[in-house]
Amino acid sequence: QVQLVESGGGSVQSGGSLTLACKASGLALEYYGINWFRLAPNKEGEGISCISASGSASEYSDSVKGRFTISRDNAKSTVYLQLNSLRPEDTAVYYCTARHGSACSQLLANKRLDWFDHRGQGTQVTVSS
Image (tube, rainbow, N blue to C red; front, side):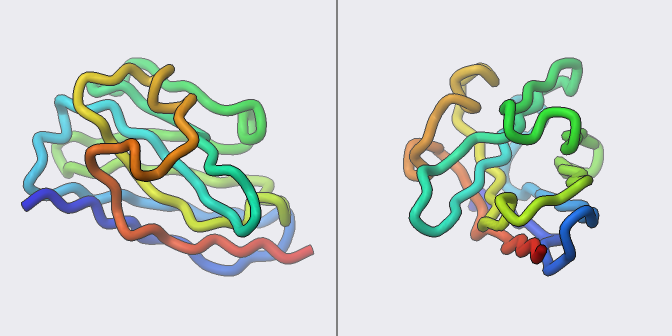
């Protein structure tokens, strides 16, 4: 059974930092690009950061570029997202997601959570001003 389990969410003040982790099981993570996706109330879903299967390439949405950093450790079957300089508009449920055979550019552009083959249960990030 494939599982992606996110952790590390929480409540912080504006300007604070969090580190999210996505632990995979039942999935050969080294063959998948992984995308962090977020959903906020009354907003469209947003792909915010993607890392290639090897970890050699990463992409970011304009809304988080320069503030968030994605990384992965395939030996630990884990993908990380470092969130710095958090803003109230970053408040959302964050999901790690994967879809077989899709490049990062495709993963990042998608706005529907149900499009992904695999996704976790999400972790809440709340940023107060």
